[in-house]
Image (cartoon, rainbow, N blue to C red):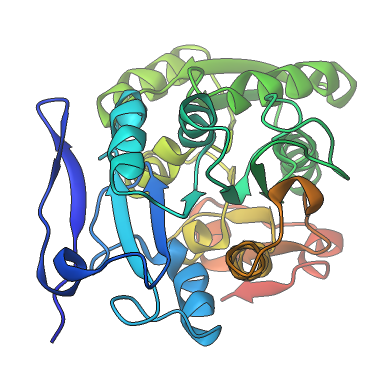
Length: 329
């Protein structure tokens, strides 16, 4: 069996272990560096990236044979991305794939020549990663999740599903450039919905208990999150807090609902990840990132967990339930 390479950071410095086939690879096959916030290795990566890697394989990119893949994890600390990007460039990557905005920004600052593909980022135009949706310019292209618009839709959905909600705790990683864009969009629409927002900054799992304690003090009766990776990493804790405090919540991803959350409204991430893999393929075959338009979601998915609703003592309006793409009983 071919052994693979895992790159992470220890003590703030990049450390690489060249193993097996990768140590002997030259430029005969292309090299892809994958930058992620999520802890893990290529063998134990977050399952939310499975579609991207599986799609690469379906396109003929087999790690160690037709492509060399380096999985570079910031291990939950996005301040480590600049060092990881430096390591990626030292390895002479032909292309960089990024799963979070801070990673994309670090990569763009470090290189204007190596192509950068966003596999599903929040708002590349709003965060200044690209010049326009139709013609991104420069070396960055890929997929956008349109997160400010989706944040508003989630708040509207929460209010429609639970009309009595009027005080909503919003968990947000405010250091991520996409977070303030979402919070601003929520602030604009909240008054028209009769909702008061209580935003709490979440930088690590240790911030969750104080955030929920503050929510209890403010008598919140609803919960939502903005769409940063740190909140996905700590989904289990968030779902547990929401259940214990009997807070109806709307989540970013269907997987969170399948893990016990009440409901989620999201772009079809699988489609975006498949398209990102196609962009990697096109670029490796000679396409320029500047000529590949940013793709935005064409399908949105609503998932509802009726078991979670029952545990909260809620009877969701039939008008909401019938719109769901998936209902968990």
